[in-house]
Image 1 (cartoon, helix red, strand yellow):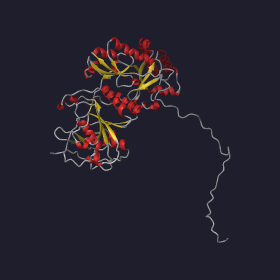
Image 2 (cartoon, rainbow, N blue to C red):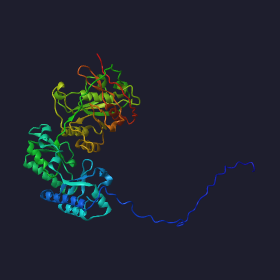
Image 3 (cartoon, rainbow, N blue to C red):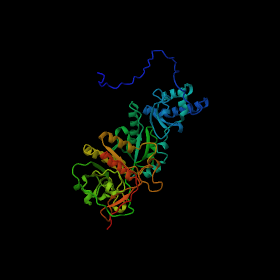
Image 4 (cartoon, rainbow, N blue to C red):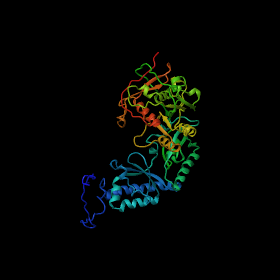
Length: 480
C-alpha cells in the first residue's frame, strides 16, 4: 500500500467570504455632470429664437390651411452637429417633431401653428439644463425658401441644365416626408394640384412610392418657379443623366495568355454587368458570357465600356500579374446592356435619364434576381456627389437591394487631375489593368486609379475569398 500511486495533490486556494452589509455602504449621487451649453443662453438669445418662431408662424398660417402642417429648417452649430447633441426634447412630438436631416448640421421639422406656440413657450420659459443645452445648439429656425429648394441655383439655370423632353425640360422633384400621419397625403395633393393647374406632367416611374420623388417636365422658367414655391417640395433639380467614363489606354504591352471557359470544369460565380454591353467579337471573353439582355436600340450601341468592365471581372488576375493575392477562381458575366452610346465619335448618341435607368434595372431584377445575386454598376451621373448626404439614386439602389435581395457593386469614381484620390481612399491600390474593346483591335487594356480595388470588391462579393495586396501595375494592350 505504501508503494501505491496516488494522484498529485492540488493546491488549495483561499476563499474570502463577505457577508451582506459587511462593507461600508456609500450612497452614489444620482445623475451625472449637467449638460454644458455650447454658448451662453441668456434672455437676448432666447428672444432672438422666439422672434424667428413668431415670424415663421405668421408665414405658414396661409399654407397650413391647405396642408395641415409645413416643413421648416433648423440650422445647428457646426460643433453641435453630432447626433448625441440633437435637440430631440426641444423639437419633439409635443412641439415640432424632427422629420429628417439634410446636410451636416441641418434638420427639418414639422411645424403647425399650435406646435410653434409650444416651441416658443419652451424657448422663453424652460430653463432646465437639458433644454438650455439644446437651445445652445440652434443657430437658426427658418422657412424653406424657393432658392433653397433649387439648391441655390436660379430657375433659369435649373431649366438650362435639364434634359429635353417631348414638351419641355425634365426635372426631378422630391417632396418632404412628414411621416405616417394624415398630413402627408395633404402635402402630396397640394403638390399634384399645382401641377394640374399648370398642366405639368407628373411621373413617378423608377422611384419607389415612399421616396416621394417625381420626374416633372417643365415647359418654362415660370413652371420651375411655381414648383419652387410649393410648401411640400424639398428639392427641384435637373433630372440627372446616367453615364460612363470613356476608357483610355496607356503604356501598351503584348496580350498575355488568357483562360477561356473551356479550360474550367464545374460551376463558377456569375456577375451581372449593368453597363453599355459586352462585345461579342472577342472569343475568349465571349466564352465567359452566360447570357445577354439588351435594352438599347442597335443604332445607339457602343460596347467599349461594358467590355472593359467585363474583362476586368473575368480576367482580373491574368491582367494584373504583379499583384499577389487576387482571387484566381473563374468568374462569368451576364451582359445587361442598358447604357446607350455617349461618344459622338462612335456613332449616334442618346441620353439615359436616371428614372429610365432605374426602370430598366428593376425590370431586369424582376427577371434575373433569383438567379444572379451580384450586380456590377460601373457608372455615374452628371451630378456631383455630396459629401454629407445620400443622393436619390443611392437611396433607390439601396431600396432595390433590399427588395430583391441582391448586392450592387458600385464604382467609387474616376479622377483625371491630381490629386487622383481623395483622403478616404488613400489606402486604395494605385492602378490596374482592365479590358475594353478597341476601335481598331479586338481588345485593349486600360489603367484606372480605382478600378483595381473595384475589381477586388466585385470578385470578392461573388466568391467571398479575396485577400487584396496593394501594388502598382502597368496597363496592357494588344499590338499588331
